[in-house]
Image (cartoon, one colour):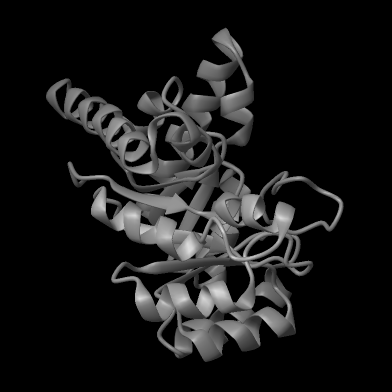
Length: 249
């Protein structure tokens, strides 16, 4: 397993702030450039059906103007497939989407909708776009992702982040076991949702996970310290946690 851990920054909520008042500021593309300067390994953006934060033009500009891999989070719809095939991001992460939710509430049910997801994934990957499925740390979901033919999974860490004490440790163990299984099946393992300075270390220490995608906390912290400083601090915690886990093995 690699000692290095990629860090992708989700810039959705820069666009949320922009859209609260309209106009062009703050600009998510400028935020992405600052993420690059701070050492981020990629940019994640979720183009929702209702365009509540990221807009189509943002995706076009991120792809064309930012020299970092673009990870497009999207629902499994014909409209989003068309946009992805036109824009050609480095990667697509398929997520469930409900119009009434504030943020993505859970993982994609790959096991239940395997037959519908598989051809959708195939179209994207035939075009050269790496596809990951945003799923719960469930062995059933991981086996389904492997059968579907996805290149990667992103483990939903939301439950882990909201739990405390023994319950959190139990969920972290489930994430670790899921990561081991997925890696053994040849899937790239990513993780994200709800991670912050206080809870990221235990996830970063799981050696099979090679990418974390973090957004809301970093954008919120940037209000107080700046986006570069927030990323540098997150990167430091991740690096120290990863290094300690390798030394203990």
